[in-house]
Length: 458
Image 1 (tube, one colour):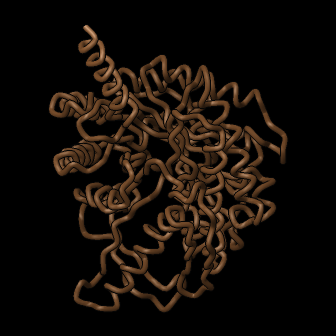
Image 2: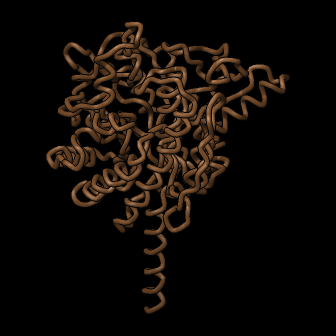
Image 3: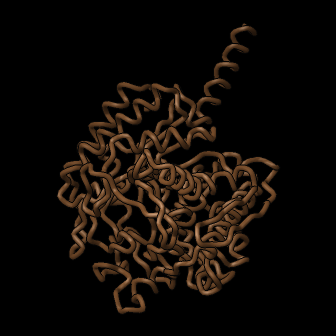
């Protein structure tokens, strides 16, 4: 009898170990979900850099938002979240990604809005009632106006301020009744810097300064490390801290040109790898053409990489060639089919992005990929490409544990406004009626079939 009792204990411990290790190939816990972000769907009642940005114009009078829309109401997810969760549940999703509006939680320095945190707790409890595992991003582009006015992500106090905000949010959401396990510190630091500090100038602060861009990247890296440190200091063992990182595929415009090949490698380092190296090693090395480099060394918590898992986001491929103008390179699209924003759709892009990023050794989950496709002509095939990529990755034993599509509903798409339609669900912005597009049914069918093929996807 003692032998069977010991055997039973060993089996239970083994089973629990598997349940607590998402990303291990062959174990339960593969996630299929959809994403959104606070400012894009909740509405924007609090002062923030993005609220100001939507209300102002460039120096020549051109509006910051191309269709002159705003996010004052957005999709009213703040009040209608359960309606969206019900749609996700019906489609067979088991995960949902949201972000926390810092400007709601800390509208002034050191002033904490407990009512806003209570609301997020209720939102996550509603999510769980629908069988959706919450993935929570702590910073998705938007800053409280009081942070932005001090210099934003390049402000010397930004890492500490963001670390404190992150700790307070996680302390609340990681405990009963929300019990969130998966947090991401920052969404796409490389995109925030590219569009805010380089020649695209589509995001606030809207400057073109390579040296400032390097300082901003350094500030974001130090903020991630500090947030990781403060979150881990809470001692909540169930919490896993990740990063939502945009991983673009960069190729030389002319593969036979040494200059193009060299520049493609440099751009790949700047946008894909430099931030990862900083938070893994503590060695910050950010430099841009036409700018000064930022070289620093930051102590990592317990001298270990400041990352538990990696969220990868991909929207395609760019061809690279040198340019004599800032920022020192030019990017272009290929000749394949294009989405409504003119971005090329590349069947192998997601596979390559996950495969390249998985070399760092962390469990990977796709936290965003999608396309602007108002007529829903290309999205069904795009989803099939991505599921083919997942099959290939699992067959190759790549440590990938989920796929979260951008996005469940249409949303305020930053500098492009409400014109681009990324949603699996159409939003009528006059009535806020939700109407699932045919591609949502395609996604649901692909999930169902995938779970039959791969026990990991139960």
